[in-house]
Image 1: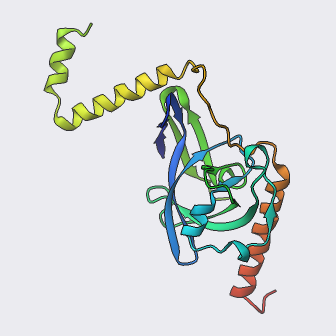
Image 2 (image 1 turned 120 degrees about the horizontal axis):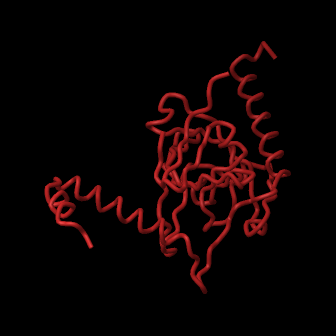
Image 3 (image 1 turned 90 degrees about the vertical axis):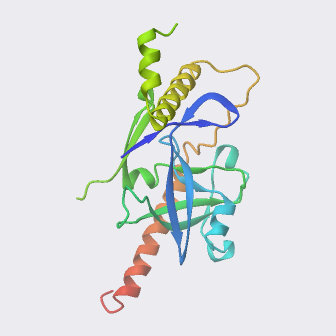
Length: 137
Length: 78
């Protein structure tokens, strides 16, 4: 499935590969727009998104140490179900996120484990990227 | 300078097609502009690059959750 690169507000001329996904936890779900980031080792979820999903910080004791400008914020492991209405409407995948206390962090879909569940090809020069559910083994 | 033929073709488009054409042009312009970075502008990088320890922690956590799921589904099998 093709997704268009989208402009970044406040950064004229910068286009980034971002896509929407529905994330579900327990009985709640939210739609997020995340950066498809092949350079990121992990998936990242900002604090407010976890709260919107009904996750309780203290119920998730597994700590994750992030690096870079997210290093100073505490992060916890959080497993969610994820699907896209046109990509895998009936086959939600399990994505594990570093749920960070940082409020201004973007949602990031990284190597662990977005890129394990989805096959991704970037065509920046053509202004789009392609995401497909991984082929069944 | 737009040719008369192109202008005529554009005018023939439906309302929706005109909007699509406009979106296409805006995207083209934005992607041309991205060839240069602007002085004084901040370009944030959030990417947790080289964070293999965190990846290992998350994968171990995912595996533990899977095991718990299986225990709940088939308590006698494990």
